[in-house]
Length: 171
Image (cartoon, rainbow, N blue to C red; front, top):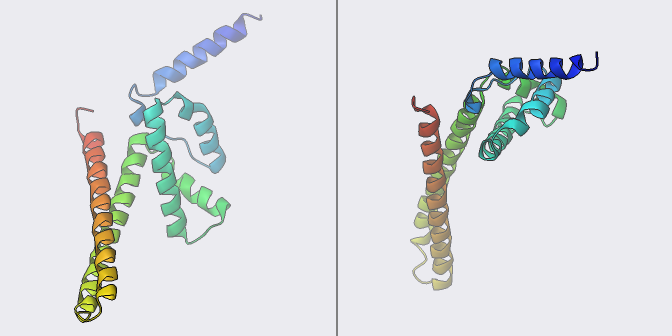
């Protein structure tokens, strides 16, 4: 009888392995409840390759924050319930793409707002001909804003490349 338990465990592991897609990006998330998601994380997250664990963790943080924003709450129980509804049955790939979409929208908004600030500052600095110290501060602010835009655009390009990679049919 003691040999039955290891064989049963091995059989269960083989059956479970056979039920999930080969590509971890296509694994479905079981999150029917916050507790179910915790169980899924405990069992599946550690099986992901390290780079995919990192991508999923980043995506999860983005989606969690976005869920909290959409729910208009900081209550962990409400956020976790909303997150469970959002993630249940989705693939890891879909969660990463969802996070990429959220991040891309946020980056585009920040770029637009920063450009608006540059324009406002340029208009305000037009009247500073006789105040070189203030004009210098505006020029330094603009340089910082332009650097920030370049960094945001670079991140936007990285996200777009990831979306393309994850969306390509050959993956």
